[in-house]
Length: 195
Image (cartoon, rainbow, N blue to C red):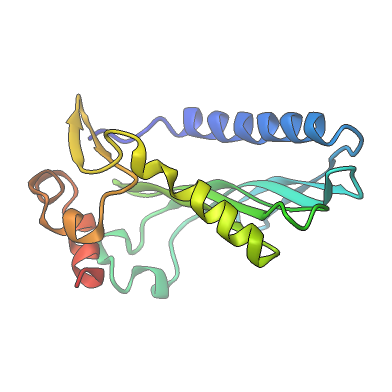
């Protein structure tokens, strides 16, 4: 698998933040995001956008960040000696939104890209936190519906990429020959978590 074009990843994440903001402003119908751009002295920066007192959302924020440095701290390289002393770049989009309606869950999302030398990966996820017990039952049932979608499990090779389905278990990752061949570090990480 070849390393992604870091400029294309950055542009995608910036566009993602823009699209989410536009969609949430339209859904709210009143509140607008206020943007704060910031810089990191050691390298990088980002833009944080906050929405308050809307018709739909009580409060929410979505941030884009891109940071880099000459090398990672020892705590980050203890289990990955191949990235020790290598320059790194990390970027991502994170959001949290609290709706006014107590039957609508709070949403949290975080998607990241990281690279140091030849090592790189994407990661992240989304979760919903219901505010009421009845909301928990309703949204948990909705969230679990991906089990009904064909092709959501397993590991497949697609060109020069590997596709890992959302329902693929850690044990399956640990045992999959494609993962062992092309992403040994993922198989190794899965080995620490699989039972």
